[in-house]
Length: 171
Image (cartoon, rainbow, N blue to C red; front, side, top):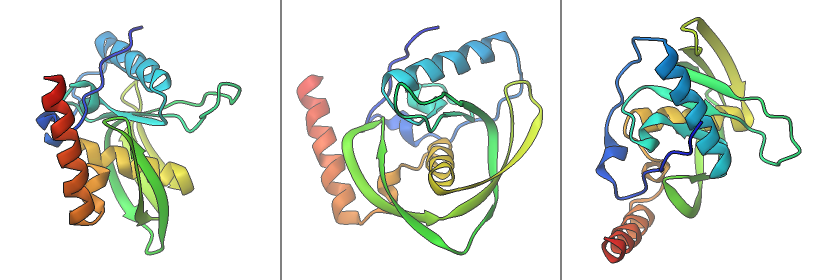
């Protein structure tokens, strides 16, 4: 397993729409393992393949945050949200691709997602709370959408400007 470099704002690849996974094989399994290791190392609770430069509809999620919490990773491939609740819930979100920036985002409080697991088997999952938020946040990544797209234009422009300036200093 390997820790992969995580893309950060303003990298234009974060705005790409990811392509469906067609082949469930050993390289896919290796990528899933690497993504999981990268997510745990960051540390984060979700990671989309595009965040490590892989333009495929793949997510890893594990809500265990602390070292002593039992790890329960979920591999989500080719997801689609098939239902959202009318009730909304606010969560303070952050993103491994937008380090050290957090903002409250309101999303549907429950979702139903259809996807394939790491073997290609179809799965339907109904989620609420933090898992529902994490799924929506990560699926957004697959569609080239960042959580800052859900906040005010003024705040979004300010954070993008900050990251562009930092990238120029590093570049």
